[in-house]
Length: 383
Image (cartoon, rainbow, N blue to C red; front, side, top):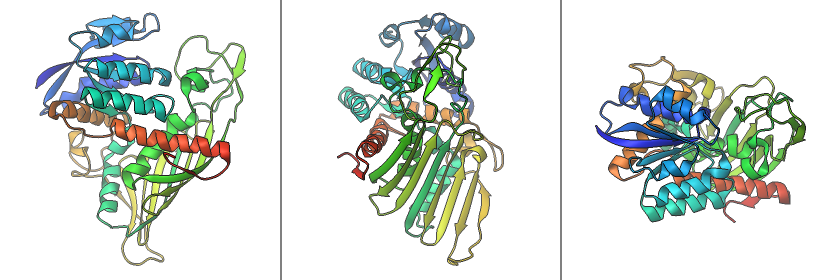
């Protein structure tokens, strides 16, 4: 393996996940062409980058991401900073001629994602985006069933992303709840994943109609930066972006869909999943039962039975983590898959996995949802 110097910008939970993924890459992909070296970490919260360097072995820690981007030994950069910084940092990384692994949604809008995409294209660097749920082996199996026509013609899809991370009324008023720094709330945070799964499995979304709501309008300000699971204890402030979204989807191929996402669903913890129905079949996947795929395939149509099958060797990247079916994978494992695809893209000079193009396509759908809420009607994606 040839070494490549990497840097991580932003060291909250997702920055740690990226770092662990780099560290584990050789364990699961011993034949990977590139070996990541942890060169630099940046976080503007005082002391956080120093602690990360001590714990994970980065050679350099800094509060200024610009120091990291300009470091001569850093050739690939993970960007896990707040959404408002995605555009500025993503463009700077590309213009420095360095490869980019950036978390979704890549900015606050499709305009931000398009600006990063343009910078990546002009620089000729590789860019992977953090749509990790598509990396689940059972999702790969579902995609194969659909591509092979096992469901007949896809007729409709239902996608749900329910979480309770913001359900507590004392949940801290972090940047995630501010329009200027967190963008469109649950749309960028959760619905973006749903849009990516829909596109990955079914195809392009042509038009949408949507409704949104703010369920908890005021929250206490945080005592420190914390995570999006933290409680607040300061004065109350206004929640400026969406807690909940529901949308109807029309796909370019003719299928219909329903997408619903919430960050305030009491009793739901990471209840993420997708159901796809066709003219003679059905598939369903639930993130919390990641290795399982429910399917109904055949020619019975009415009263056709449903079975649950386990992801097995040959489905996605399962064998990099387990020798056989029934051994569970984790959220972190999906990010290791993502890291491998990112560095394989760098090594081979062509994209693998979710790209900046996928991020832009998802952002255009989210912008259309926002436009639909404003107008009250159907909006064409990209119009």
